[in-house]
Amino acid sequence: MATITNPATTESPGIGSSSHVLAVTDDYRSAEQVVRKLADAHFPVEHVRIVGEDLRAVEQVTGRLTFWNAVGRSALTGAIAGLLFGWIFGLFAWITPIIAGILLALYGLITGAIIGAVWGAIFYAMDGSRRQFSSLSTLSPSRFEVLVDVAWANRAHEVLASESNKSTDHPLES
Image (cartoon, rainbow, N blue to C red; front, side, top):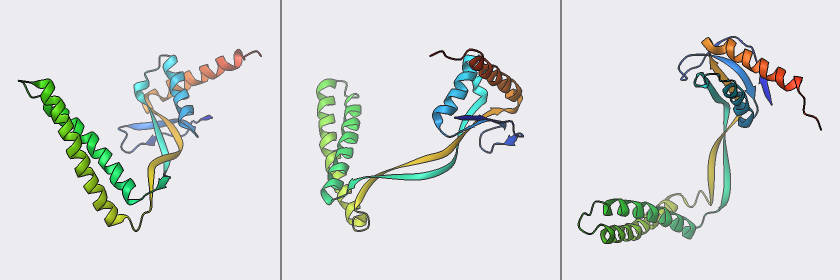
């Protein structure tokens, strides 16, 4: 749920200009809805930003990490990279581009898988005794602020106020 605010103007480091906090929301979808209301009213949304605040690191454990899992995942990553590089270099073979492209992609796949497997084994040996699981890391903000350039703050508040009046004037009938 969006909380429409009217605080003093704040300097937003790294954002480029003085900004006004237009709304504070608990989730990204609510922040998007605020921007969508502005866009629907033909407000110049290039003056609006959505900023995630209070970031926290979330690490989702995806499973146990064994030697063969580490080698297999690294081999797969290396194979995909090798296939891509081989295919790209195959595009530069002017005499027989199809055959050269297929062969170089195949060689890249095999070479990439071997190199990836070796790297996976090395990194597992170096770190495997401390970390026995695989995981995915993400950054998750606890709230989102919808910011607008100071020059456009009054107009943005007017648009949002008129949009909220429209939604209360014509409630949905059940």
